[in-house]
Amino acid sequence: MGYSALMLVRDEFLQIQSGQELLTNRGRRETMETRFTRMLGIKYPIVQGGMQWVGLAELASAVSNAGGLGILTGLTQPTPEALVREIQRCRDMTDRPFAVNLTILPTIKPVPYEEYAQAIVEAGIKIVETAGRNPEPFLPLFKAADITVIHKCTSIRHSLKAERIGCDVVSVDGFECAGHPGEDDVTNMILLPLAARRLKIPFLASGGLGDGMGLAAALAMGADGINMGTRFMVTKEAPIHKKVKQAMVEASELDTALIYRSLRNTARVFKNNIAEQVLEIEDKPGATDFEDIRPLVQGIKGRELFEEGDLNRGIWSAGMVVGLIDDIPSCEDLIQRIVSEAQTIINERLQLMGSV
Ligand code: NAD
Image 1 (cartoon, rainbow, N blue to C red):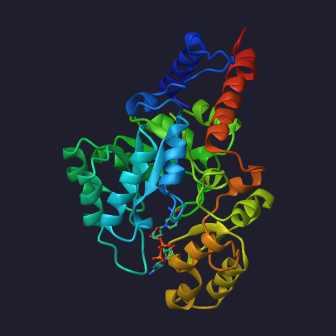
Image 2: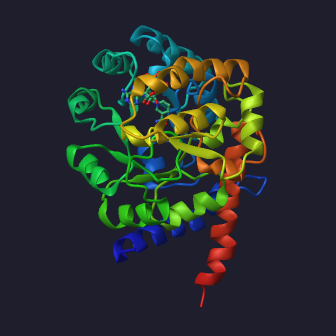
Image 3: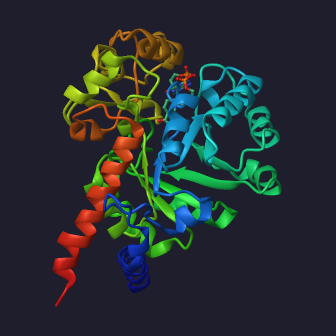
């Protein structure tokens, strides 16, 4: 890590350590400040990543109420009008900041992205997470509305591009992540220090995060916060069937699969029978025809899987972090646990090592 990044980490640690006035009467610090929390006015540097069919108002508001940043998933709503209604529902459940995710990736049905972007602006949203493709076409609209743009990137070159075109924050998505890790296969142990050396804007660590050790490590590697998707799926408030949550509690770090590699649209999903059937089709000699796998992977089946708890109805995104998930806490308990674990690591284990 470069000298300036190290100084930044040290400054953040000093701030955390000097915040004695922030101790609650239960001995826990009430906030964990970074450039990211200050920018958004949130208590903890913990973001719930945008997730198809999962990022509904119940989860986003629970995360925001617990002091993190909740995110509604734009395309989970069938129309821009429905998204506006979901934003209103979320506002009814929290008065804290929350964001909307807009993912631009291949889809079976064409998506009117501009209309979704317009709806986000007109609904008065002030934080947007973009993902999938270069968000440049949407930036003039978002910037004119004073929206903070967090762009999710799976490589340093895309992170630098995001910074150059005016994104405010980059969410650096390592190969461990759920959903689409890109095609470079670089893990966060490399991506995060590179981001610390090269980016000027705040960045989040995304992929493989699920506990306080991950948060402390991400901060040590220069990140200004963490983004968790899979970990938040396994919470009381996540609007998915209990059987899906339980399957992730029981899973190990070996229970994910990378599908669509042959289509250069790689996605990390839970390794169920359907994912294995997709892999078999992709393994056949010759180019993969998406039409051969479409009936297995269509998003609507994933939604039914989440609603009904039939684990082999379709596919669902899950990260390697399933190997670290052992319980189904509330978002409040999860965030408090992660923050206090990280603070203990920073203030005890790491401080001891740093003192002369
Ligand atoms: P969908 O029903 O349109 O498509 C199902 C899956 O097939 C998606 O993963 C999609 O990327 C893929 N796909 C569609 N057309 C394809 C093609 N021509 N070539 C290769 N792959 C193709 O998708 P959905 O489940 O309704 O999701 C809507 C959007 O959200 C999609 O773009 C999807 O990729 C994205 N998504 C992102 C994440 C994430 O982790 N960021 C997770 C789930 C879905």
